[in-house]
Image (cartoon, rainbow, N blue to C red; front, top):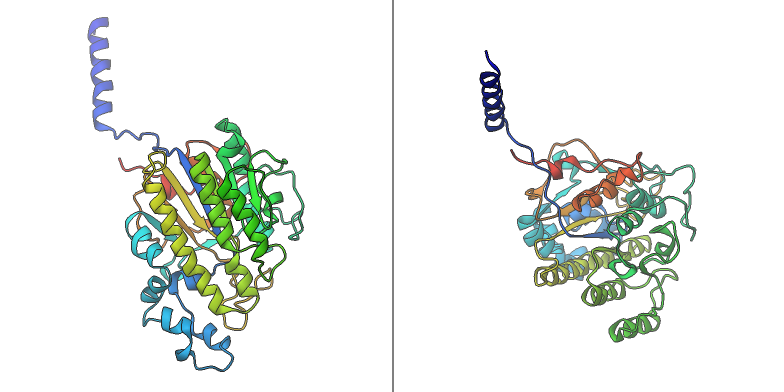
Length: 373
């Protein structure tokens, strides 16, 4: 075979290999990400709505059928109850735009890797991609040296401080979300703001006039409204909204208020979604993860509790919405997802590899990024 024939044969083989072998493209990315957490929201309510055993145990011997929450949220099946509790989340968002993992009755497990099963270790695992059981052993207001995915994305995307923003109900987020001081916008707990925006100034003043029963946690209303005002004013590329009343009302044994907080969140979520859909920067260009820091006890005797001695508190849930992901509804029968995968997944939505910063972090959730080919 002469040289010309050899080249023709090689070129033909190369062509045939291209047309007969599926090409795996790089997964498409989004331009913005939003992380939302509902502190301590149990899988039982998310997937099953009102828990009648818990309601009976917390109704002070009043017939449950006469209570307002029973009349508002009760239905005959778990699917109907959860939709009664969170109609937008289940009826619109998960049905048409996203998916959710964590319903163990369907073989879907989402769990912590940290063994503490309370808030600071959970949020740290979520944001750093690692559990730090040997170091983070309390909820004290303390900053640790571990860089978070928020630090990573700010640096990788060269964003100014307004374009990465955290609004949280619990004051300790001022220390949790970054290993540095004042690198991006953080407003958490009863905290004033130096933002000259008149809406933000009004909200930060009003929060001190409507106190909660908890010294370090403000009403979710102010956290949500401040986040929405910032969203409209500064169009952040990375936003973290951390709500807290689902945990604090549960600690107080107020199951009625816990359900009302979940229902109120559903209204907030609908408002946020409709705002995003109406804005060209965010519409079809935004990835969203909704999850929790820890679970709670499984029964009417321990639903108010969590921690390393509480069975059930290791199980959580995660919901995902992204124009790059085709999954809809509930996940079933998959390998467990872990909380330490949130950081890398958020970064991967934007096209970045978080493990270049933290090699020991959990990997991105692979199922979200498998491309059909």
